[in-house]
Length: 91
Image (tube, rainbow, N blue to C red; front, side, top):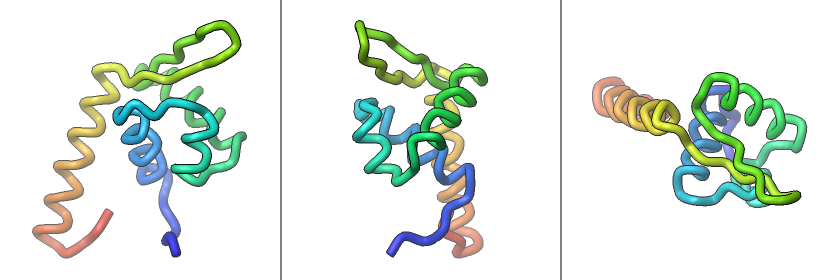
């Protein structure tokens, strides 16, 4: 059973899937386990902050991480390792 996640953990999981090349809406909804309205909210927030780019191909949208988004993922992973190694906390 999946534990409750905070907002930053959800954003990390969402962006990590996009970085792996999985940017389809249905896939992200299932993999990150969020409802569609949360998906729309995340895409809007991350797009506004310059962390993801929405690419449109006809009627299909896909997502791509920007440099700022890749930087966030790297920093989150570093911080997570420090917290685990130093304090035994799993983020």
